[in-house]
Image (cartoon, rainbow, N blue to C red; front, side, top):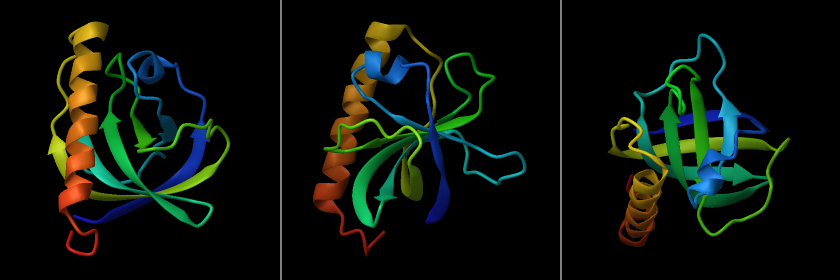
Amino acid sequence: MKLMFSGRVERGEGMATRLGCPTANIAIKEGLLIPGFGVYVGETDLQGVRYPTLICISGGHTGSNLKMEVHLLGFNQDLTGKYLQVLIHEKLRDIIPFPGEEEMARIIQNDLFQAQEWFKHTSVSES
């Protein structure tokens, strides 16, 4: 699965940051075909530099706010207003109902670990 998306980073609610995984929020334009809701591994191109990325496509915390959130592994700067190109490689898991902040933080830490392991064991050219 290789899908490319792009867009400007918009300010989010800060929920992912509170859960230990700051993300850049990219609005999904109406009519754009997207893969199913889920958590994916991929890469983000930021000004010509590619970063391994954990990606979440969901309806947001409320279930009614379609969005893509990307976390660039090893990168911790505000990306608001920046233009990103995001390449999705592989799905890690489906979206689950929001279990509360503490449990969600634990799940996200596991997602981050799985993404790091994926990049350790997969040549991006293989995917």
